[in-house]
Image (cartoon, rainbow, N blue to C red; front, side, top):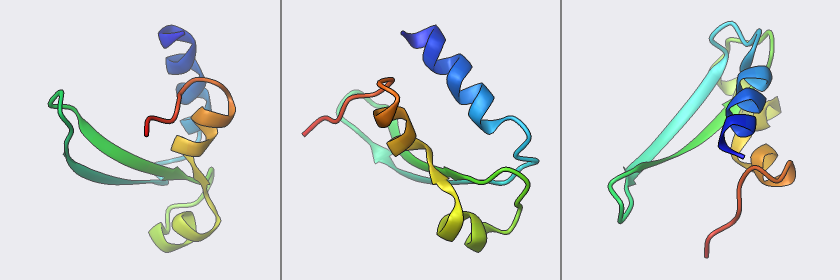
Length: 70
């Protein structure tokens, strides 16, 4: 599903015109950085994106491209 997820994310972020907010966290046990990503097509103001935009992490969960790890 990796290629499908990549295509899905590319489609979701298309036409955002840089309107993406990324918050990163320190690396997890495998050395990968964790991140929260918000986006809103047609918007470039960070505060508006955070308030009204979509949280990509949740969208990926809802679409079945990610699983929650506890």
